[in-house]
Length: 150
Image (tube, rainbow, N blue to C red):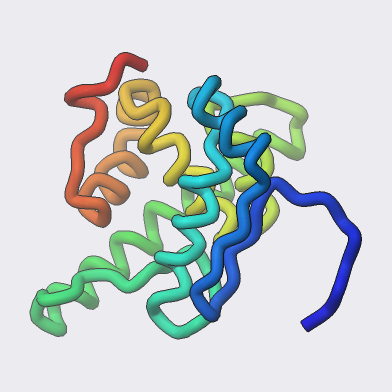
């Protein structure tokens, strides 16, 4: 492990640890539409479940048949890749959108940023990125747009 004095809002380690800066946790609670370090870092923990490294593809289709899991994987990959590339394009053009720019840095960060948005700005995500919302809804087995105030 490498030691560093770098300030961070949070970290998620493949061994299962999550480290959060309390001021960032409070900031996320006060203004959830600006993102949540707590949701973000726990999304990384879910991402680690399928093999110990974060790649933006969490363990998909547990309890489903092998053909169903393969179909889920293909659809997940199609949607996530397209949305990730669209975010990268927007960031390169200097355009702002619903998803935070940090999500354009890697597929793992995209999954975490999309998860933040899914829980904190659900209605907007459902309206502006319906396929992404659908994939996250299937994965989390929730429909937060149904009860969110965003």
